[in-house]
Image (tube, rainbow, N blue to C red; front, side, top):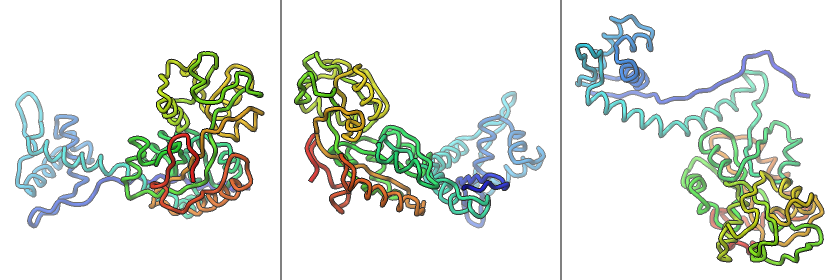
Length: 356
């Protein structure tokens, strides 16, 4: 049973700091940013006073001290138009602003990690770690009872984007039969960033889920272009949708030749349910979903399912969760433990072909 705490909630916010040193002058970066933003936003030295909690006179003195330290005028007064940044002031503000924007996501990830470490001490309870992941039945079943883990479902691209933007602690994703760093901009950014680690959780079989008994006799993706089969798709941004689009390209099939291509569902289970209820004849999805709804299944290949986390976050939750998933995969139809210990970024099969 989880015990509640009467201590206040914890929030960690890390931001650009440090100093600018010019000769013997050491200038606070944070205060400089506040001062320049105040002038740019309000056009008045009074804006500095309000932002820093100073009197108008003290604000002027702070501004003059900054200008003296840098050796350049940063603000100029214009009769009838208040105060404005000089060209040097604009350049300094833009430079510091660019640095802050560049560091925002890494700092936010570090803030999440600091919060996870301090929460047990400062709030009396550990902070649940968050996982945003592409839909998978094996993962969802395990996460439902895993202590300290909060799961949210999203497409693979969205999950990775949220991790990069520090809106989650981990991302679960898959990319069909291609090397994940080549699967799109979000994945390329993940691969290029040294602050993340990616591991293979398990491998799973994907294929065409078909109405029980396969009454239309569908034997290949090409059969979906005849116009007789009603297809139900996954949403844009999902790994399964991307894989299906690659399969269509392999077979030189325009999307508008697939009846129902624009019909979208958010999960494998939802696609399987639509087919099971007779509203569609086929949809790409995991074997586990087809088995759960008693559907026929035409395999198109195996793929890896990955877990990405920030190096800054040291949490045993994900290690234990990964081990449990590998064990479940070894005894569940349509899944298997990862077959290779090689760098997952270098491992891939061609679209629609089994992994080694």
